[in-house]
Amino acid sequence: MLLALLWREHKTRITLPEPTGHFAVGRTTYTWVNDTQTDELAPSSGAKQEVVVWIWYPSVATKSAALAEYLPAAWRLALAQHSGVLMSQFLTRDLSLVQAHSTSDPDVSPEQRSYSVVIMRAGGGALTTDFTTLAEDLASHGYIVVGFDAPYRTFVVVLPDNRVVIRPPTNDPENLQADQANRLINRLLPMWTSDTAFVVTQLGHLNAADPSGKLTGRLDMQRLGMFGHSFGGATALQFLP
Image 1 (cartoon, rainbow, N blue to C red):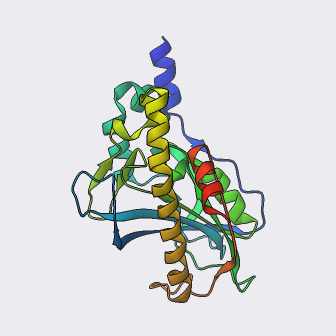
Image 2: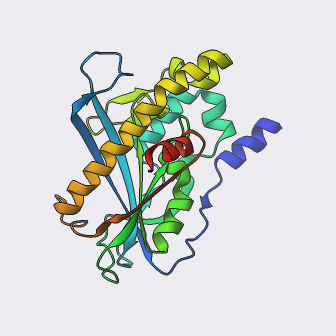
Image 3: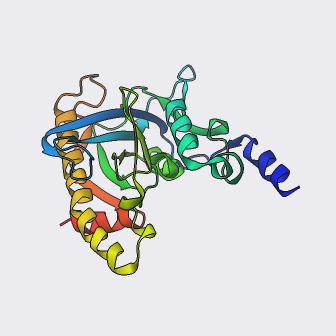
């Protein structure tokens, strides 16, 4: 009976809370590779630092724009395959049935010349899209919200070439005894801070010349903030002056 109830909840469609600001919200994604920095957590030496970046922003309202998927299908599949049957089929909702409010890649709203930038960092192995409601709400109030997932830090990352990168259990402090966890945390925090610095540098390049043209000149990099959940919060404290 319990499993039947859990399955029913798993297959129930849900719409996230509506953003409370007056801007419509767009979402776009980028994948950036840092050719000057190797990833210390990668199993192969020489692997470069990579990030998958999710950006929510005040957008032009258009009825014809397609809603962005809460989590793209390739990510949903990878997450299900590596979470186990109980977690993916009974203890969490079918993410294909979660409806967000962002649309995919619309133009930035012309209401302001540029918009303040907020870096949003999820905690532990959490996915950035877990915080979609918060990101959409901030964007609806006139902020460009930037979150990112990094291989070997985030639980699962799907890269554009369809590589799926899973965070190994050895990179999860929750799997370790207190003294080992503290050593791992002290090792991970500089990496998370380095990831953030790389993303901010890339945002500067994007603001100077977005290949799509959409975000060129629209990010106010002089008004930059950051917040995070759990380990993401610790990263924000470490990163910000």
